[in-house]
Length: 177
Image 1 (cartoon, rainbow, N blue to C red):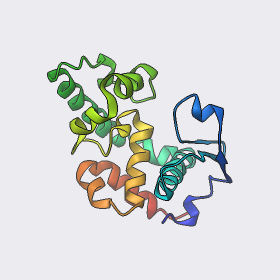
Image 2 (cartoon, rainbow, N blue to C red):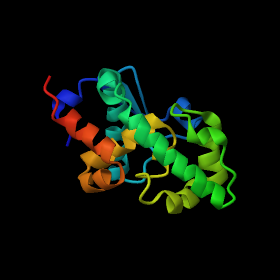
Image 3 (tube, helix red, strand yellow):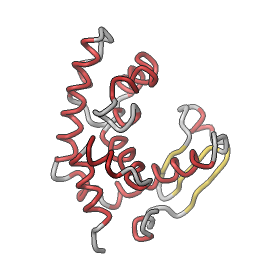
């Protein structure tokens, strides 16, 4: 599903129980060439999703300038975040002001989205705006979730919902080494 030239940033995949995953309530993490995945998964597809997602984070290291330097992805993400801010505000969900401007991970924003609003509610709000509630978290997750959908033959949704991200992924997959 992913060309081998885009897998060079992943040296090893560890599967098991890891305190650093459990303490953050996450299923997987990419760090320095390694993908760590919990062995408690819903099904085989859940494992595949996690691997694809973490491979995308490895690509961010290798292709950071290509992905982010022109600012187009950030512009698309911030525009969507601003629209989401006003939707949440109109529903009296009291979004933090920083939701409109921050692109990097912010614990307060993450906790607001995940714990205060909740992903079930967020699913109803982000349909057609973001690929998933998790893609709202920060710019890196926006890229990673889009990458996941693109790789798993949901390219039309990526193109429709996030056209600049889609273009970036098309260019990345067609990039000559």
